[in-house]
Image 1 (spheres, rainbow, N blue to C red):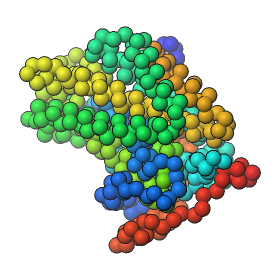
Image 2: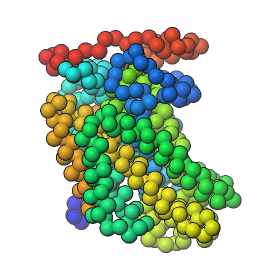
Image 3: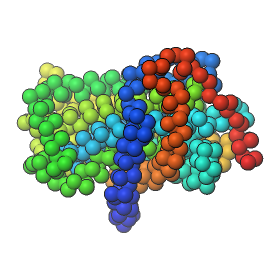
Image 4: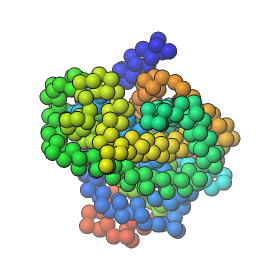
Length: 476
């Protein structure tokens, strides 16, 4: 296991080198400029999230597709992932995570637009879409679509199954002393019952769990920030300054060079919001929507909620708690170097009447967030498997996925995180290629539906071209 960990660590360092940081963040910036800052339509996008489009084609509502995508993103990346980024990259990593979210909204918009535009139907009328269909139908590069689908199917076992289950059982054991094997069995049974039911069951659960748990967790963060109120200004200043000058973090934080700060922040940002990774488009393609732009706008809000809001709050909570006296012994290597312990120690501040309920709040939030992420990624992996091996692969893939949920509860955390980071980056590359090479298509569709000054409902209700059957695609 030690040798495997060293190998994965080396591969991870290469995958998240300068070349990938420039590719990912550069794509965010390029699309923001190329599409004339689509983030400006955020208010309209949030409104569309709650607007039904009953006469359109699709399998789940726009809101349901968004909740399923949020289920896969709002999870350990927002909680343990933020703590890990700070532990290994210092407080400056929080700013890089936030910037990844702000500019990543443009990439999320673009990748979901092409997913809907190039989606197809199977013989049962089920929508199928994602980067692999955009690569095949939009760029005539089926071979690259196969690579993406294979990476997505494998990546789901890591980022979706093992990382989430590992974080949950670890937090439960730290908070309540429950053995990992026991909580792992319960978790596996609960999520397995939902996963076997398929997309519509996953969507129904996500529509209930995600809004409630997001509000629940955000309220917990706000309470801590109120407690740490006198130190928020100092925390914000330290986050901004150390993002470009890591030495400014001072004592109590692990020393990191600028490259490491950016790498940790951007990698955790990708892990959290998945902009550029090509995962959210796999469920966006199932949305009931008249045209690609409507769902692209709705999907874009996922990055806003996930990183711009939730991750930013988590980062402020951790940094301000470390600065505040009597909360965290910031000189303790055991705490300062462990993301999970950092966030857990921060939530200890919630103790009304001297009763420490903070860890319970964190544990409940992490359990539901991680469980919903497991559900969302189960669908992603299943869609990829369907592309590779047809609908016959659906049930076997679901069963194997559930097995990996349990495996995640008994393996080394660092190995799991390194493997997830590697596959995150690998999966993003073909998706980014699709987005960049089809950016003219994205720009054309955006201009067609989002004409400045003419964003009335009649334009947004224009129908997309007819959706072809997958059988026709395969004959080609």
